[in-house]
Image (tube, one colour):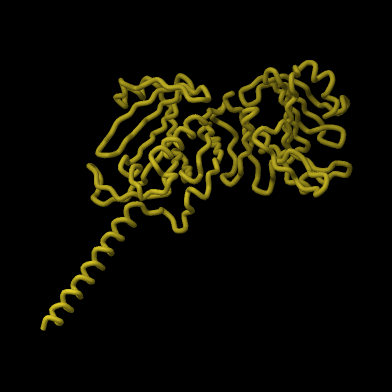
Length: 358
């Protein structure tokens, strides 16, 4: 009888322990859930990705291990790859929310009007590391911290960036190291401090699948078809393209050798060349003939390109001349953009070029 009671007691003890383990597993695993299967551990990827949006007229960089980028027609989202289960006022109980997000909205309204609408009288003036000035307003709602940044583009246009995060989510020690409060705050700072406006918000419209090359040393972006590449030259040994760096002084956008298979020419595309410590007038006298014979020049005129004063030369687009050349002073240097041939794709590549704020 004593043995039977002991067996029954042991059985209930084992069952109780199993239930406790299951309950613990359920709550610990549901506290932070990846939003997609197979999300890599943030500690395995510390890369920073550059993003440029021609419709918004902005560019920024973000840690791809910490944020997922969700671009849309009217809003750009940077979202946590983890959801958090929270109950808070104004939403259904048990709704899944991202642990932290950054939302970018373009407002065609003056800064003062937006600050008044947001009741942000206590907003603090801020300046990012790229000298972008604006205001920041902070508030807390039921465990959610919200920071709203207002960056005026001009007197009538303002970029609004809303940063929100669950404080408890970031402080929880079950999160991977890259999602600690300090790491996420650092990631948010990375985005804000890399944020730049284009000189023109109405940049050329290009297909959504076109990649963007961004040159941070000389402050520009250019887009190109998926089959093209951004190169800084050709490896003489392997005869393969050398990918352009973010500081390359010479870049060619081309799908070599498919575009411009002309006898006597290796490949054709759109080329961006920086001439150091050179002024426009001296370059036109000494270097223009390297791009076009004088007899092949159709027109040579002053113009504006991507919001900057420029000299435009139209040539014949054959072996003796480029099709189009733009000489743009960027003190103390000179930026030369040349298009070898006239093709619909190369025309669109050139028109996608945008200067960033320096």
